[in-house]
Image (cartoon, rainbow, N blue to C red):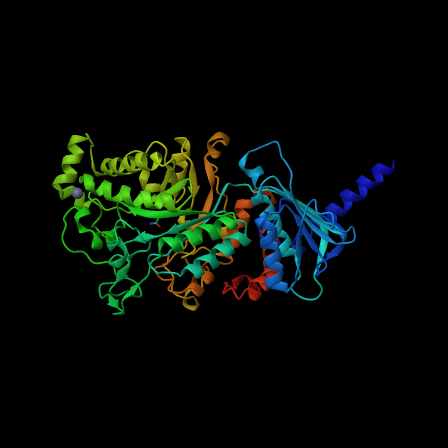
Length: 537
Ligand code: ACM
Ligand code: ZN
């Protein structure tokens, strides 16, 4: 009978508190929160107990020092001087027998009056437990953390954000700040768009002209392309040295984020061709792009030395990035030059390729073979489906969801990133005249929140090929990092919840109420986030 009352009380309290989950301002919302009473008081007398080498413990210690001036010691689990009287935050590993990916990122967070315990099978789970804990710390008044128990794990394995650093360049420090935002929302993949027509941004030791020439453009279009284009007349450039790339990759790794580099081919390659025109179809002199859009000059698919050039580049890229996936672009490649190039036409004849789409497929498959020799996989935009998908390729579906659906049905892994609603360079308010210039479209916060990455057209088995989704931040019209923040936050937060929570647990109203509290943290961090959600409708 006693047990019955305990169970009854537990169910009633879980139900009552469950109705008001917005009171815990955690984004993305954890899978399960069981509220309790009282709070743990965070102060200098708290001790973190963990394994000696726990980078996560050090991360938490540094966060509490930088944000709240707390000087908290880290002690080892078996340190005899740990007093029973210390309030402690214990971080430890527990073994979950199931090793599916979602479990490797799972964690539990227990807050009682004397203890906080974060446990997980893997350091990534510990890190996410810490992120939830951080979001529970009040920003005003006493540092009282409400007692509760959280059990949490993500729905999707690929929780990504992209940043285009070619159209506009963002410094290493800015890129690291962006990575911090991903970490806060438990996103685990940073897709770094490093090359495009308007600028090559990664140092390649074997081909120094890629950066001395390819990273600089003479001028930039003002506003949108038109019949009477106007230019600013100012040179623009920048690139990351390999040392800087390594620093960014290490910084992301500490935050359990994989950096997936993108090296565009065969199109969007004008900056590279300005440096090494011999790898184009026509040769001649090219200039780094100064206008937005698509250029006809692309890598020559008939020239074997083009592949040697790209393989040399990819070798250096594979050495720099531990990621399993290397993004090879593949989008928006005009076939104009290939149609009139003797070498490309000869290749088509020799390889029995019936059209230029098949030639693009040949190009990507040849690159894939090389990347696979490095024990890595290629991922590409959905145009890589045209003319036949390379055998092991992963598809990033951007022109809607169709490409992703076709690829999943062919048993290829897919990352969903449809323009609607995953392009965060689109407008977020209907009141466009009051917004800074954007490329177009309309992807408001609620549309991002409501997004379901697995298309209903897929069967349960086919749906398993959807690894997750990603928000894209193309920067033709995003000239400063402050504007990157404005365009990406809070839409990044909404996407993180769409990727973390199962669809039946999502609740937009609840998200917005948490976001209002969470925005105080963004204010403290001085993030230039978009504030449309604060306006009463
Ligand atoms: C793309 O937006 N061109 C992938
Ligand atoms: Zn050619």
